[in-house]
Image 1 (cartoon, helix red, strand yellow):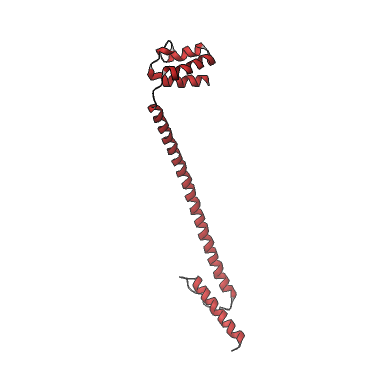
Image 2 (cartoon, rainbow, N blue to C red):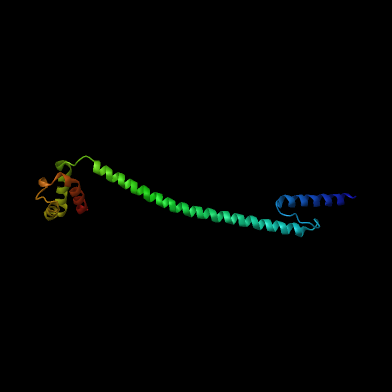
Length: 151
């Protein structure tokens, strides 16, 4: 046996081993292993399978990403609602307003910015002829309205 013949036999055996490892669970093709097209055909088949598999993983990842975006938007909305509720609760629990320290300066600013008619209209909305006659329960609301009118 010549050296070239021995090399060809060993190369054929290595090809058979490579295909057998690659084709786990599939029948190993029989035939002349010296023919390259048989090996190339099997390699193309498995390259295509790998591409399909990768494409499927990419689609699945895209779907998960889309679902995550929807869940994230929902979580953001829930968080915003919770923050608004906490802020509202904090305002309700805030210390009561003092007429001279908190309300009167805002009413004077309204009178200066928009005139006496605007001030009288706002006081009338809360049933008072002047600021001293306002009920304490309306202090926060009238301050808010006056600031809105001032701009």
